[in-house]
Length: 110
Length: 123
Image 1 (cartoon, chains in turn yellow, brown):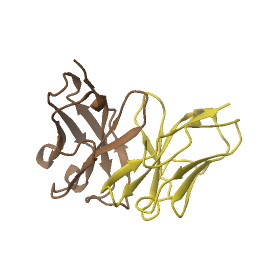
Image 2 (cartoon, chains in turn cyan, blue):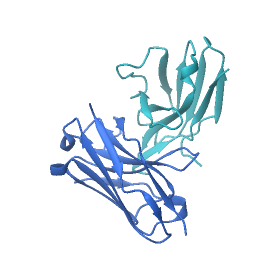
Image 3 (tube, chains in turn orange, green):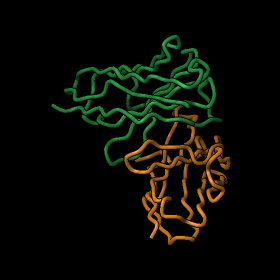
C-alpha cells in the first residue's frame, strides 16, 4: 500500500485531455510540494513537474500540475502516443521523514 | 551531461550483504544531496534512502532502517548503499538519483536518474 494514492490506470484518445489524481494527507501533500515523474517501461524515471506546477526545461506545456489541500493532479492535454508511460506523484512526508511515492498510474493512449 | 551509473547488483542469498555503487559525472557531485530509489519488477517506485551533500544528514525508509547504510565519497564522486540482512522483498532495480539541492529538503525533486542495477535476493 502506497502512502500516496493514485488510480492504477488512465486512458484517452489522441488529442484528448486526461487528468491523473494523487491523494495524500496532512503530513505529505498537505504540507509539502508535489513532484510528478514519468517512466516509460524499461527506462529510468524522469521529472515531469516539480514543486506542484513547475515544468523543467524541455517538458512541453501540455503537461501541467496543480495541488489543493491534500490532493494533487497532473493534467496532460493534446494526448500523443508517446505519452504512454507510468506516472508517479511524490512528496516529502514530515511524519515518516522521507519521500513517499504514489503507486503509479499507467496511461494508455487509445 | 549528468551521468549516474549504478553497479554492484546481482543475485544474493537471503540474509547476506551487498554493496551498491553509483558513479557520478557531469556535475559537481559534492554540491548535491543524493538518493536511492528502488523498483521491484513490475511494481512502483519506493524511496530507499537519502544523504545530504556533506553526509551530515541521512534518512531511510522504514522498510530498510537498521539494515541499509547510505554513504558517499565526494572526492571520488561516488554514492554507496551498503545492504545487510537482505530479504526476498528487497529484490528490485535500485536507481541512484540526484537531488536539486544540497540538503535533505521537502522543497526539491530528483532531477537526474541512473539506469538502475538489479538486486535479486533468492536462495
